[in-house]
Image 1 (cartoon, one colour):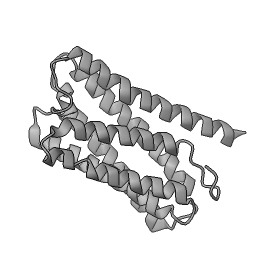
Image 2 (cartoon, helix red, strand yellow; image 1 turned 135 degrees about the vertical axis):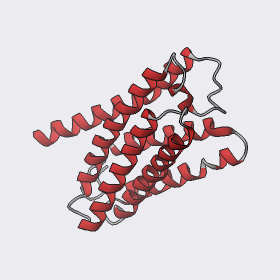
Image 3 (cartoon, helix red, strand yellow; image 1 turned 60 degrees about the vertical axis):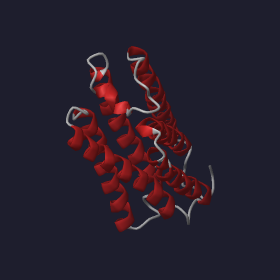
Length: 195
């Protein structure tokens, strides 16, 4: 029974995170309708006096929720992978989430520190999704392939920046990919190929 309720809690947690991940950026956009979210980075919400506290709240609460959810995801395969693989996933998780939190605290007024933390979050969270997929290939091929493909999709979205579309399109694809992956993982259990 405890396991049953725990799995329900995990699903509620990720659904709540996903709702926040959609609604708060939309709320910020309505507060600053002049911002072109397809070109300008979403982090500019953290600079405006109208949205900076809302954006700060958003980044910190999402950091906490993603960290908890990632720990839940790791726990599903903790007994199936070796200690080195488990440590790698845990450290990647910690580094990515701390970087997201710091990118929220240090807004774009401090351009280079903000970009450094934002870049670290992007690289390490993408790596977390990728290596989770790689380590899970032997136990759940569907989830493994979904994770690897998602990470490659995220990496390919950086091409939108080089094509001159700005950071907005890239960040929207990144956030959408994270939401979809986390929702998928909320239904993940490491029981053979049971999905």
